[in-house]
Length: 103
Image 1 (cartoon, rainbow, N blue to C red):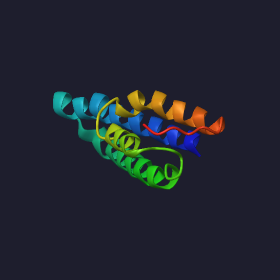
Image 2: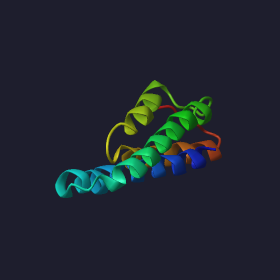
Image 3: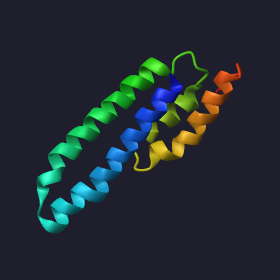
Image 4: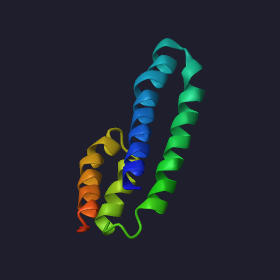
């Protein structure tokens, strides 16, 4: 299940970058708002999936308060989900080896 969460986090991160690096520059730099609605909606859905999956997947997986906080805050910053992925990968590896650790 943690692997699925990592995929959702990847999609959330990609949609954030698409919104900030493609749709918004087109709107404000070239006066073309065509991509704001579809990219924004896709990002909104990905963000809600991320938060929902986090609430569904993470409990009981050895995530401490800092792990929860870190994973939550990652969704609010560009590149945050990408920077948090190595942590999630380590947690996933620890779970598969039967030694969940909380950080």
